Image 1 (cartoon, rainbow, N blue to C red):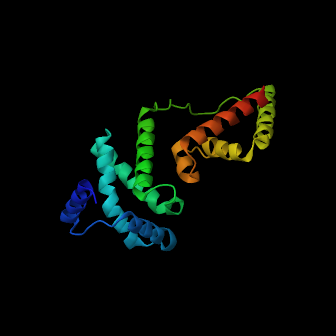
Image 2: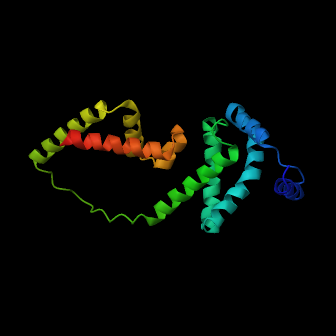
Image 3: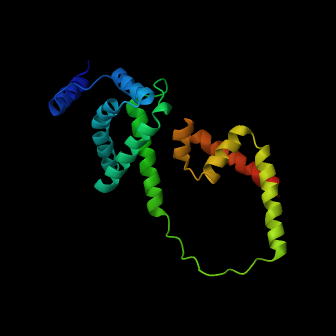
Length: 197
């Protein structure tokens, strides 16, 4: 065992009074969360990882409030999406910190979005019939073009544009890498543009 690893275990033992479990024990805890919705297993995972996630987010530039909120969201995601954790693809720590990184990016995007303009109240004049007919035809054309997309591309378009999910939320839901999601969406949008011209 390396000196660094033994030092970390000794520090963890001093803080918690116990030696942290090895990675395969975390996998067992996740299986209990996934299969039995085991709250004790979740409490153990939460107690170990939530403070580390918060520290990671603060070190990456988040203020304490945002870090706390994101850490809570990460642990909620862990509980709700335990079935998506695949130990063959990544360790539990990698999976959790990837979720944390994606939540941080989402939070930054939300902060940068401009406030929506005030919408006028009251009765809007009816649009001209030719505009209504044109919109109906475009909608029908788009529906046909969507139906002709390959299934993998269509599913991503529906998640991104109809379910309004971010790329990182789609990645967490599907297990696909972000690069694959972006390239499939780009191909799908190119096909839709071509079909609509």
